[in-house]
Length: 206
Image (cartoon, rainbow, N blue to C red; front, side, top):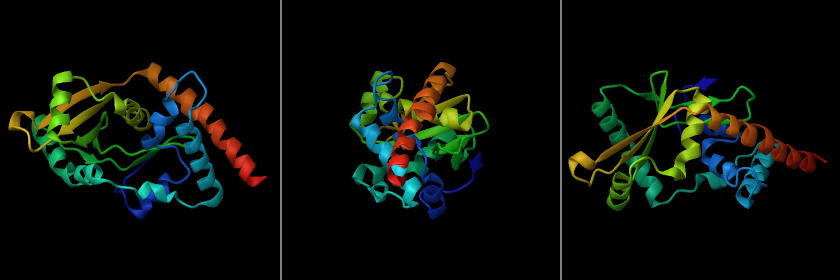
């Protein structure tokens, strides 16, 4: 289900409540095939507390300088992407899984088939990404969650730095849907991790 809501609004935070979202999927998918690590265990506890108390975890309000930079430059990055790709993007909103326990907020939607994930970075990071090619694997699971939750065919990873020479200001790499990865995420997040959440809920309610 898609909800056309602006990010960081009260409604958006309410939709995220009690759900596993893209910001946490990397913690869950870490050590795939093995027991959940401490970050995933704590994430399960956080979601369980939200389910039982209905109160948002205030640590989500944390911001640093890099995050503020990304927020301020995002509109320029989107504009550059649309101009380079001769397209119009639409609000990323919030996608909710069929089970209602997972969610996702891409930065933008690109028609019905694509998503857009924007990262605004400093020059040294931009140059490293361009020279290396591909996409920053730190965002691998976030990107594939966009594709999974939004039922998309691809997601464009867009890295933006306005301080770079014009030809290097925007770097885009397209990640295509991989049904094997999605099945692994469904098992790890939708089944195994939710059992961890439910275990905590049961303890809290006992």
